[in-house]
Length: 217
Image (tube, rainbow, N blue to C red):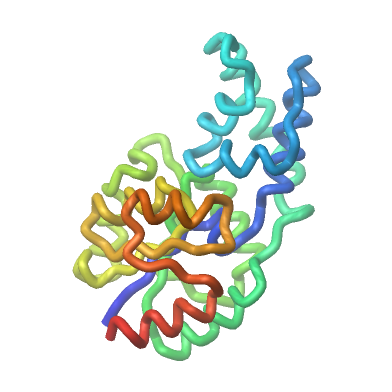
């Protein structure tokens, strides 16, 4: 039987507005130019440090980046859930997966404590066997280390794991780990990006994940 690993931001939840508003507060606080919300589609996906680097001026010093990162984590922690929600159809899809008794996990590049907080607040009615955010002692995606470790914990061969995400980082993670790469159309990035980085399948709606599971039995 297949097991599932989901990315979090842009896959299960739409968190872009909270991320963008928090980062823009940081930029204002430190006297930098802010960005339009849509620009953050291309700043996110590789963890908080990369987000801050992408949002900061190109000539920002390492010290300035670290200062801004600390500010972002403080501000984001205060506003974590104000505008963040599960995408339409996600709850229904998860309910069906639980009825099918399919194991599922989350692997995110969001800092681990924020990942746990989101899962507790938005998905507390669902049983995810493994939940992992970015940790200092584990390489972040697209390194496949944690994805492979999750497969081991789920007692599933890597080739029987479906990795579902919305960015090139997710597709690269899946392919590096030897997993089935599934890109979602409703996330932060384009279908073209997903296909160019190895997506085996593209799903238009969460319900399509159920149909794909049936197809891949």
